[in-house]
Length: 246
Ligand SMILES: [Zn+2]
Image 1 (cartoon, rainbow, N blue to C red):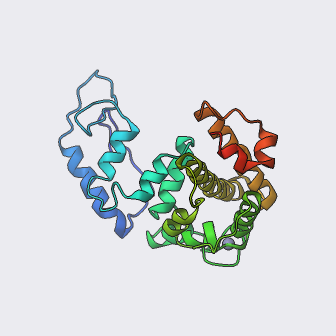
Image 2 (tube, rainbow, N blue to C red):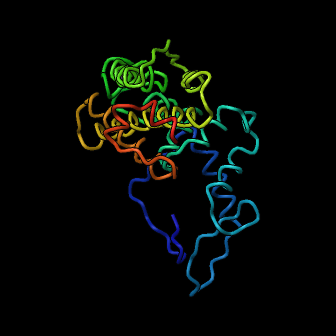
Image 3 (cartoon, rainbow, N blue to C red):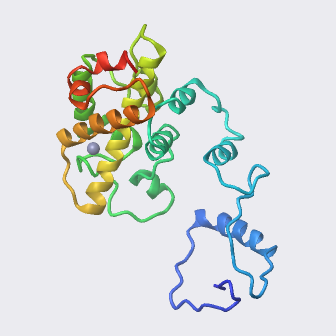
């Protein structure tokens, strides 16, 4: 390994590459061939996508999606309209695209994981369909949500279908933006709770997960919609009435 000063760093125990990493290493090496180090000049980051040298989420998204068939699909138009913070939006986008780093995906990429069982229930393989929609704990969070909203669904375990069905028929567009926002709230909270269990040794608490969904969505909508001036207790008691004034 060579650092920016040109010095060779010896590694006593370099980690061997996985098969799937080799094309990335080759690609990285090709990029490094054109790098010319200038003595005394400090390194700096340059964003080279889209003809501008300033990073933006929009330019990154456009670059990543440039060859995708689903670009501009109604599902993603629906997602981009949600009144959520970028981190939750990013999580929901990764779930819809199956780009989330769940244990089954990690195993397929050759990353060693302790086991492939779901960290919420510990009983079934942690696929993205299971973790977010089929897991008994995730399912109970969705049930709390349906009960709160006064609806019942035959819930799909496919993320795209689940997101598409999560709406109130014959309602204003603005109402369904809130429904979509709640969907993102549930998905991102399940993801946050999974990380809480893994990295902070937390325990699964369905009531707390649902309460966090209510808090987060209320906070996001209140912050991003000028007409959303309802209180948090009113939001918890009358969510449908609140949606009509957003
Ligand atoms: Zn599970």
